[in-house]
Image (cartoon, rainbow, N blue to C red; front, side, top):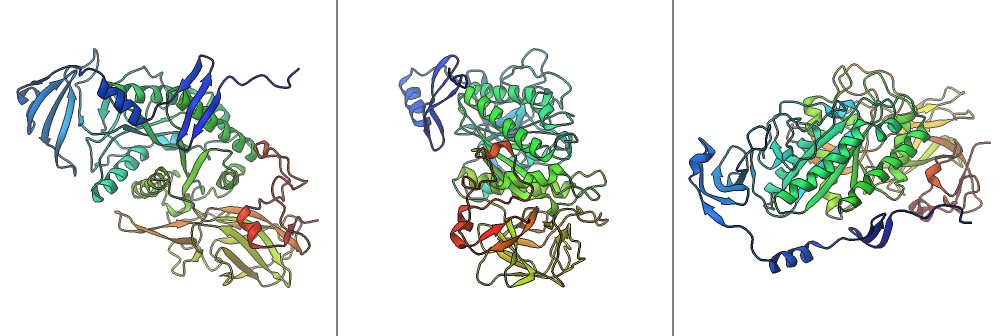
Length: 530
């Protein structure tokens, strides 16, 4: 007897950008490339006629060259926004019980989705003015870009509307358009939508109203693209559910986050969409909430992707918060800019990774010095200007120390671009000795999260808010190991204390991952504390 049931879905042939031939309960699925679809379209008879129309039907709009194309008016116009004089379109008639159809940009190429699912903080909106108000749209159900917020069931629709308020995802879409415009690249139509609810755990989120609404949103995006005669593609799916989870342990949160990404990937496959890029901002807590199992569990996703395309665009400690723990208006713009950087890079097959700390161990010749190993896209930088007010310890602190040791200096190792040397005034001791970075700090009163740090790489971006944005290191809590110079680093698969399936998240509390880069760089083994 087989020890497991046969899979009901899967891939038979997979390319770099997604599944080519797959199967599910209904049979085989074949995903054709855009060039094949375009060739089929060219071979089909031309449908519909283009009829000239008086532009007065649009109302008092500076428009000309109006004509009918199927169910649409297509025309040239000079409308507000940075896009200048371009071609636009509008539905000829409104659907029953729907508001008047909106004018949207008439663009080339696909309709691109910028989607998100999460907790209530992700649904925050503000009255922002978009630079490209006709290129950023949402579902035409009068709910706006923040979606149903778990309060009602979404209906199927292929309608699209312009935005009257902005979420972080619509700001991301606008930022992507701003960059493309500055580089004289094509300006696509971007479909922004966020679905949230008030679930108390991520497991409940997966089975709740937000996930149901997200499923329908994906279907509505595909329907809207078909109504335009275009393919649908998704640039990113934002995941935002950390402090809202008040029930899960760290391992439970990680396992459920992987399950959420698997479920979303299945939805995309059902609609012929490529495997999604998942993006997030590493939640660093609030002004007075600086530590929890879930906050620490995010670090696992920084190195264990579980086969998913997941990226942290930035750590949350670089963004200002209001008294309710929500990003300020300026911070939301900065978040959108950092996420747009990550989305543009990853969708162009370019890397994007924030510096991540992976291993902490004592120096063999000086027990007062802790070596912290990490990985990044470039050399680590300790920002001497300390713009986030991390202090002399650069955001590092010791946890579980019974000797009362204090960090006296943090320095970069001149021999290794991604190693740090943390010097203490005396050797720290303690069975649960842990080196923390940007985790567990004392409450703050300066409008920034309590957690903060001064470690980053060389990336910088001039924000339109007037500040310089950097790619700061992700928070981490690393057990401090002692050294044994005897054998090479053990990989995850060969370590006798680690199960083969990392997805179970059942690891010894003191275990720290060792990546291939770290194994190449050293021939000594970190040993767990006794």
